[in-house]
Length: 387
Image 1 (cartoon, helix red, strand yellow):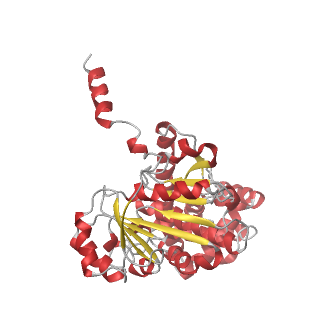
Image 2 (cartoon, helix red, strand yellow):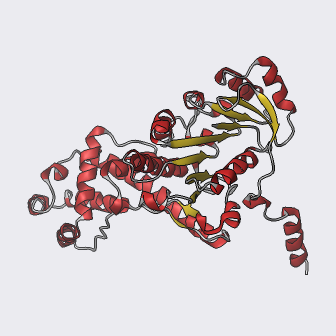
Image 3 (cartoon, one colour):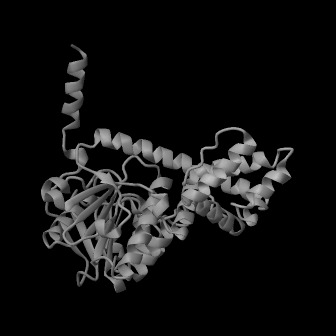
């Protein structure tokens, strides 16, 4: 299902109405919430709603997932020649005994403390220490000694290869630091109970559970990488029947599955969303795409949707895109899109026999942004500051 409309026309309004009905049936849901539009479900359904913020747990990630994370966060994928040394170094750092021996040898030759850690920053420190050792007068002796604990393929890796790995790990680390800072701000400002995203798929998808991934405040690269990583993991778990059938709700879908004309064409989440929307039905994974800019959404992905809820659309490029992609929408139906009132929608596709106009009923839940009258809130602050 795709829900398409301009800002303020009622996209989230319509989606929350659908989700509230599904929640009453106990259907498992995963909501990718970019603006806090769905946290109001917590007040309606209580403990059944879990609010998560993004997290990457390196020690628990599979090798291919780790490469995916670095590729996404650095926005510059590891080359084929970089992947083996990258994984080789990370395996060394994951082994506490091996890491302790490497640290001891590094410190003996460099005569300073070397802070090795089992994460991307640890890889940066490892490569820096190796470069420093190669500049020492006694480098031959040091490298021979290091061969006892470090594979020769890493010690002899091309300098350009190691620099490329270092740069990508450093760039990805900076993004992870930003993510951590945002998580702290969310912890301070979000008045609802929340936690970091678990690594176990069963803690995210369960009967009756509504899992909201709270993505407000994160830049698109971080959001797309974390979403792509999470969806890969959950879809694999569903294929192996480790978790229940579930529904994915993707708000601001054009940022996670952009069209080729967008500068974010290489969004890390694009590939896995394509896979899920083309193959998900076979495994019981449904998708609701929501977008205020349909023309920026990947047309291949949108064309795989078999039903559409279309609210007010004024932008001519978006209107044309909808006509081109949604086969059941004709010229006459498209003409009424700019004149629809908030909450009015045109239904089209497999869930109706022919395009039909409807008025979406009001959802019971509220968006986070509607919890308070923001004008009254500013007025109260102004009065307080004027005392």
